[in-house]
Amino acid sequence: MADAQTRDFKLSIEAVSDKHGRARFVDIGRDFAARVENAVPQLRREQIELVDPDKNPFFGHARAQLFIAQRDGAPVGRISAHIDELALAMPPEQGFGPGTGMFGYFDATDETVARALLRAAERWLVDEGMTRVVGPISMSVWEEPGLLIKGQDHAPTIMMGHHPAHYAAWIEASGYDCAKTLYTYDLELADPLPPLIDRIVKSGERNERITIRQVRKSDWDAEASKILAILNDAWSDNWGFVPITPEEVAHTGVKLRPIIREDLNMIAEVDGEPVAFMLTFPDINDVLARIDGRLFPLGWWRLLRWLKRPRGADVRVPLMGVSKKFQNSRMASQLAFMMISRIRDVAKHTYNAPRAEIGWILEDNRGMVAIADAIKADINRKYAIYEKSLP
Image 1 (cartoon, rainbow, N blue to C red):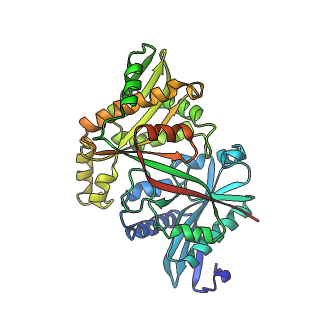
Image 2: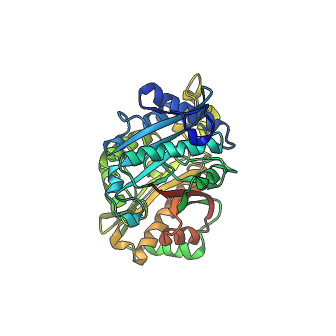
């Protein structure tokens, strides 16, 4: 359909939904990423699975429409519009709630294309009964939320988005306001933890009620269930929270299993009860950049070699949580510092990791921001999530 409001009658926006259309949608995104400095090419097969309703369990509680922009028959952009039923059921003060849809996978060659794509996504959401849109969120909030607004000068770590700086102005010019900013923090592992943190850790190690242990891959389903229970409890009051389902955990666990290292992932127990966790992954982007995201002809061999011994790469801490009943106690930060200390030592000495990236963390999550400040971590990337009321 031509969008007359753009005054560019050679521009058309096509809704795609079949297998071929989804592959084109992904390939257009890959072409855009290849033009962005420091972007890391991802595995195409996994990118296609993320937008395939038959492969991604996110679609068990969500629906989506993909759009491709073309000018003179050539692709010039893409966007998704999607609705998550679990997000609709959340309280409005937590960011989503009734009437809130989302957009994601946003790429455009120029502002005219950007405006046309955003309008297409907004119209679809309005037709589906939505009154508000937030984004970019690609596609679940547990995948790649937010638009990169700081940090284009270095490569992203595993499962973090990377976007050119000018996208922000195009989105804002289309009537969007920033709803929240997400931070990631950089921690140099060669630097020792501050003396105060070291004393807190040692005090916890003397506390017989506390046990910090590695996850057990041999009993992964049970371990994942414990982590899921803590996560959905610990994060339930956070802005942007949407419950993650057992099916999504199982699906993600299968995908991530090759990079999960028992000694980099911790569960904290108090009196034998699991009450906190911290997940840490070696940064697979380290090898994906070297194989250009391609498994053939020799990329698979280099990837398998790296997976067997991922030494020298950075690590990322994507998730941690402490059960609500401890969150306002001194023990919450003590458990966090104990897991950070243990994982830091393993990452540094066993995997020769030079740095860790922690996050994302909400700008107003005072507890987590305080922990990051206490260990002398620095903000290295910022992501904006935008919002707009729909007519």
